[in-house]
Length: 224
Image 1 (cartoon, rainbow, N blue to C red):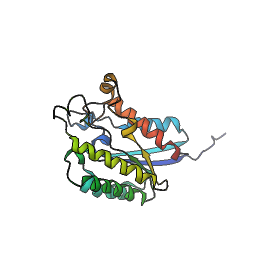
Image 2 (tube, rainbow, N blue to C red):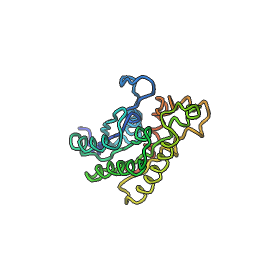
Image 3 (cartoon, one colour):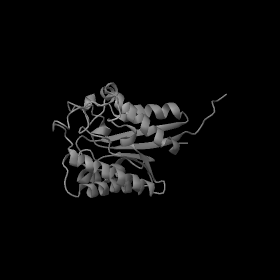
Image 4 (tube, rainbow, N blue to C red):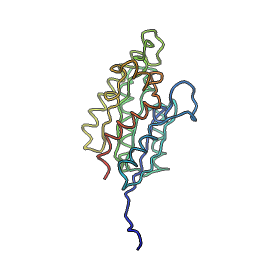
């Protein structure tokens, strides 16, 4: 007797961003060492949704800025590799390294453009807030050795608040994944800080796995 054939829903998912999407674990810029969150996210999707299939594309690029780089690249990625069911977007850390007057507005508008590009093609979006940076990591900020300075940190806070409000007004086209709130550095024990964060800007492999879990919990309701 022939086995019963069952239709499986297929989800095409794009992870778009900078080195935090590429999975850099700090130190040497070597893609062979990357441990992107999409590895563990793919595992969670397969394990928890056996009646669906998932094609997860990671399009993270080291050092990329939202303004003028991601905003130019995403439409090309969508055109070449899409359409996607779900697009996960994280950007802004590199932008706030060089804090400039008015950056909080231009950066937010850039992130908004990214989401508009994806939702304009029919995708649901996961908007990730910009996580805490090395200004908090150990004593780097106090010693003036952090990449992100106080001005950049203030911009991060403003942009995240703008992003939360934007998502709240998006009519469910965009889902908030508040990484800054759900995976902070400051509330971690020194042991967990070492476990999850590599250099204050990037995560360890376990940190990216934790990031994947947070993303999955916020997106799972989009899946049948």
